[in-house]
Image (cartoon, rainbow, N blue to C red; front, side, top):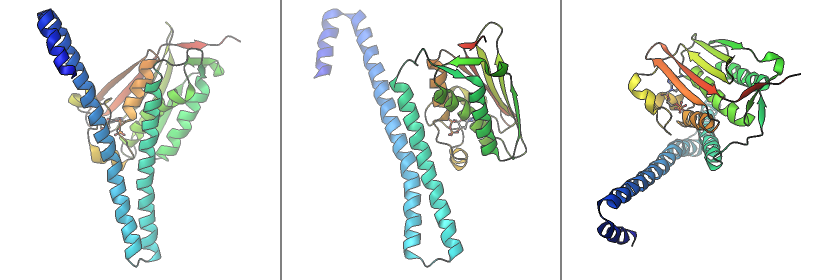
Length: 264
Ligand code: ADP
């Protein structure tokens, strides 16, 4: 098998190679562990709503319910189905982004349309429960960024939906878009929400990493949002920066390196 082969090589080539090979194995083991963890996580995330759904189906099938009770059960079933739909949608987005390592280099996205969508989605999610503030200058529709609109919408939309989900009613959410004088642009979302303790910040973009699993699920989270954001930004050569203070709020900042203002 492969392992015997490795041992022969270690003996015949000495210490230097042993080091290289063992690093190689560790790398592969890590990849294997990550894959196993991922499959386990996905299975768990799907099994939970399925179990709940089965319970509700059983209730519907076996108990005599009033019209009001029946409606309540059906609403709860709908919520669980939506949760699974959200998870599958996020998994597909991740797979799509990871499957094509480089974004199309000749595609440009109009920033005014993109941010208009982000704003409309934000209003729909918040439903007037928060103070939403948009501070956006798009040079009369002439500003464009490199990349496909759906990817950027996914990245920016995830940051805004997180800000809304992790900010109690009455809180403030400020979205900004700023062109940098030296080129490129910065997109930021600041919220006055629950914030994040410093030890969690470096791990937030890991798939399925959550500070508080039950709160995240309750508010419709899949645990994949920030890993999608990170992938989108990285493959466009940008950066995601997170600053936060527990109990006070958070700021998520995307740098977008390739932005241009079209001349008319
Ligand atoms: P989820 O679907 O769980 O929100 P994400 O990948 O989008 O998954 O975020 C990972 C975790 O980061 C969340 O579960 C939450 O604990 C934390 N988080 C993300 N955004 C915010 C925010 N604006 N304020 C506080 N915590 C946040």
